[in-house]
Length: 167
Image (cartoon, rainbow, N blue to C red; front, side):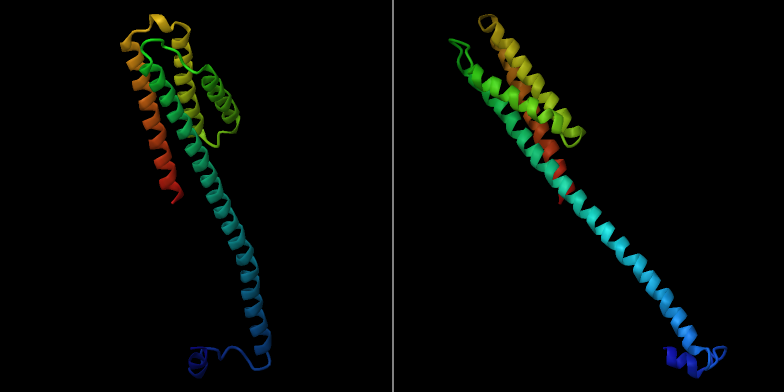
């Protein structure tokens, strides 16, 4: 294309004695543009990789929270099944509370922090129920179970949304 343009006289304003200077000027500008573009592209790629790693870390965290939400559901189920003695493994509840406390300061985003609070509220409700197990009605236990199931579904929805954003 350049040869065709030169045959038509498009570059007549460039004299033979100044042509090397013009070629050097054009390629200097091209070199500067490449020197600016390459680092910018690397920075953009690194930022995208970092954001993807953060989304994957957040997703893994939410998978762990879903596991905790399911554990609360299992504990409530176990509590509900034992109609005759209304006892629950307090060590399991304590372990669950300890893990929630460990997760809270490292929550990667607001969704994860909200899930931790929801799960914590279920555990607190369960512990409160344990303080007066004999006076609990079947309706109150059913409420605990519905609450735990709803929060497990909420955790699953948050996880699905996070997974969709990661893909």
